[in-house]
Length: 214
Picture 1 (cartoon, rainbow, N blue to C red):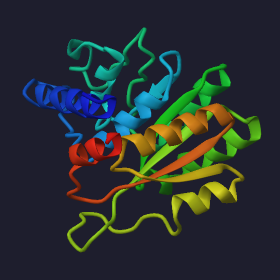
Picture 2 (picture 1 turned 45 degrees about the vertical axis):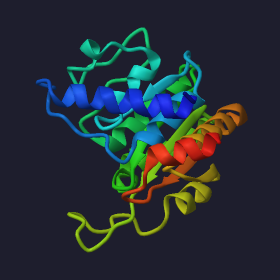
Picture 3 (picture 1 turned 180 degrees about the vertical axis):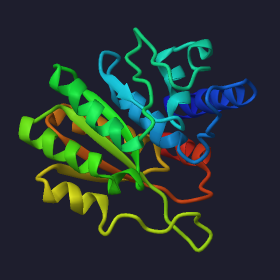
Picture 4 (picture 1 turned 90 degrees about the vertical axis):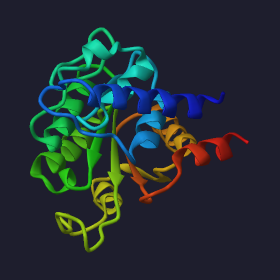
């Protein structure tokens, strides 16, 4: 079994098990984000800090975090270097910059909504000013007429990153391999990096993982 396929299966199994338990504060399914999460964790080294949100936390099993450590959704996971989620998604970006300023390499997961928050803009600015080793990984879902919330950011996250002078990478968010390679490249480059992972609803992530490995 390939690394990408195995990672997807482990994340999906963990997500299903957490959904069956009394997860605190409530379960948030990872469906659709599995490839982004798998690629992110696989592209990092074990000593790097990983800053997920509630949806991404199931991916901690790829660092061999026991499910019993993930039942409390607001708890961290030491010594695995998995940071606890914050009440405000955008605040994760600032926390990630803080971890980087302490001498760590860090990756933080964000959604398109959080990029419209002032805390995200502050994080980008501070990361550039201090050349922090932080990777901002933004998952972008296409919005349609059925979306509960309309567009919140006046431009594309990649445009925003470049405006701050941050190196940006645009990848297929449905491909574990594409995300992993982008994360590895950004990590090796150092300094602030922004990866925009674009998602296609309904994509067969497992089939894509098998195709990538063929």
